[in-house]
Image (tube, rainbow, N blue to C red; front, side, top):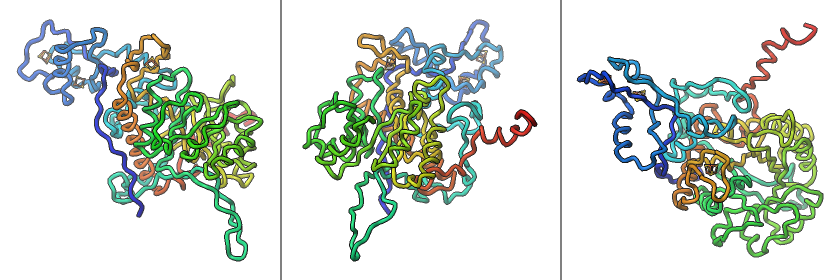
Length: 463
Ligand code: SF4
Ligand code: SF4
Ligand code: SF4
């Protein structure tokens, strides 16, 4: 059995006061000093923590909002003096897609590297737009032998990037054509470049170091290459935008993967890279604009080894008035490749809108081999996704003062938590290998399909 993939983690507490959803308002007046005050009974000890917090207050603009919202003290106070309040800062986090819940969950995972547990306390909706319109099959959850995270069964999350030949050619008992190079990653995750509006100088070195720590690969724009140690190059893939010159040959030979922007000369640029380093795997980056799906399918008909399709930050089709969501675009590409008998030959990487660990599993079920992420790593550094990332702007996460070790630790914790969740979800589905989950839509239910099956006949015209 291969050695189990394991990421070393350690708790990294936040640098800033926690931004929780709830706070407790304590009116105090008329308090009857009960012997068994409900504040002492808070199982999270939040009332005592609040007192300590106020004693050591450093930022006057940040109040204590870390109550878990269980209502116990509010309901049981003998005089009804306590009430729950919503934190306005929490409500303003992120946007409609990157919701405050997603941001807070990401912060907790980046702090602890643990899987968030909601259990019976889950207060959210059971369906919604985007990935929330998809439910994974958890029918094997009760089988203890499937419990991969605790080591009773090995669940593989490894994936390969590269072209796989449909069949092997032999001549006189010998392989007539060499097998193309493959890049093996221990989990289906590529660390993508930060979008331009969030590119902070300190992030790139941290992302590269995180890639090394987690044995993954970070994409780095070759135009803004930071100083790199030779040992880091194995965990770096240069991104060559249109018009960018070929990378330094010596550096390129130390890498395993390169990503090239799609364009009219993409085939020649791949050839030029392969002239320098024949063993490198070349990925073509395709923006999921209105013709992105068709372009990805067309590229796969040629000799392209891997395609990285990228939607916008919300997972939507780029520039469309009524955009398709990434899960639907992945499904379309996957199905078209199957129809063209090309699916097993090319690797499909999907990016844009991958905000939670469960989105990785869902994107793979839709047909991606692996996903790329960027914003979750930034959010893990206590970013509020407030879109005020200009030089000299007031960053609520104070990211301009951040230490490299803190960034690498939090990013590593987040990836470890996602890996744990991926194993959990695969165990619950009875899957032992992520490669086999690709395109297995029988492992999920889609809201649109269920709605159509249930109500389609009732509400379609002519019925
Ligand atoms: S339970 Fe309510 S009234 Fe009693 S001591 Fe606590 S806060 Fe005061
Ligand atoms: S609502 Fe629950 S978590 Fe919050 S302070 Fe009261 S007892 Fe503690
Ligand atoms: S919190 Fe800081 S890093 Fe995050 S979006 Fe706002 S200004 Fe940018």
